Amino acid sequence: MILMMLISMIIMLISNIMMMLSIILSKKSFMDREKSSPFECGFDPKSSARIPFSLHFFLNKNNFFNFWCSIALIFPIIKLFKLVNFFIWTKISFFFIIILLIGLYHEWNQNMLNWTN
Image 1: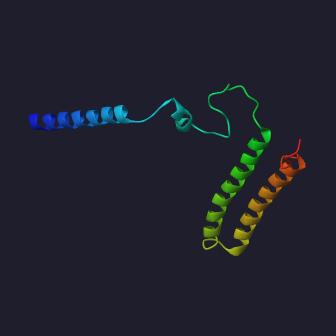
Image 2: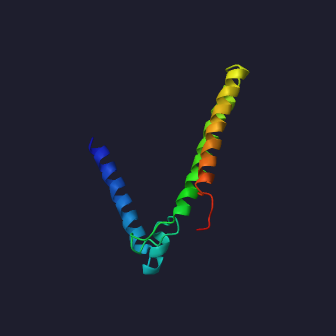
Image 3: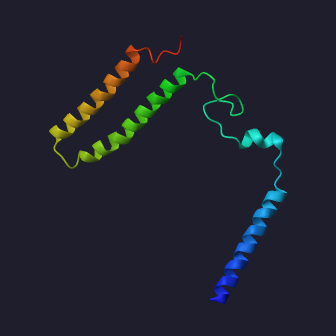
């Protein structure tokens, strides 16, 4: 029991020494602050958080997200082709593609795909 405690104390001591050495020897400066800060959507993280948000960027992100989710849902439909008969598979696939096309038509009708103001 004492041996286990001694080994764990040595391991903790070595790990703490290594962490302190890495902090002391690192070459971080004030200029590296921007490189280590998160970069999201082209915003400057050091400026005010109350700047206007680009609606076109948000809508474009939603379009990509919708189509990537649809691709993730199409793969199980392809696998379903072997499990059910062709008529049911065709109805499911057709229904899914119609929903995607209705969403795309709605975005087009609302001028969400137009990048000019």
